[in-house]
Length: 168
Image (cartoon, rainbow, N blue to C red; front, side, top):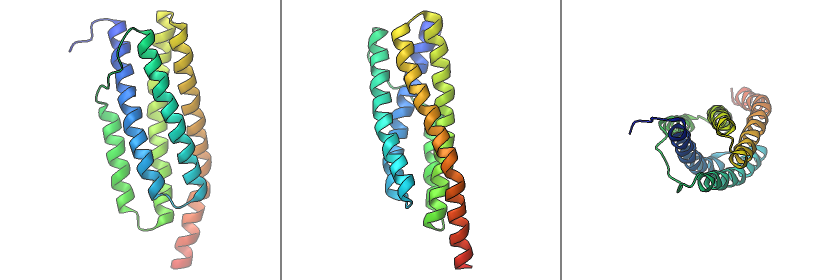
């Protein structure tokens, strides 16, 4: 289907992130079972709850737009999830798997941030303040999560390096 105006573009991008959030939610539920670090597990659990709220926010945006929620297959999310699954399977130890999980999370967060920034801009231009607030809320949560993931990465890398040195 051709996208012929900004409203259609907005709805298409909304469907894209709506699909992405669902795919990322499923991936997080898988990751929590694969993670070994307790802080990482806790961070993933918190983000699962955030993602569920973000999906709810997106559904509210659809309502405000007079639309039914509709997932538009997000090829980027499909690829990021596949890549994350593949690298977790390739992990040679639990500590390495934890670092791979944080790397996958960081990639996802930055994709989501870029998506929400575009939607925020669209809502601003359309003058839809209610949608704008919901999308800004999702954006802020994604930015905070990205920061937490990036702050946890050095500790997990150090832990993996120490475990490797002990086994060598």
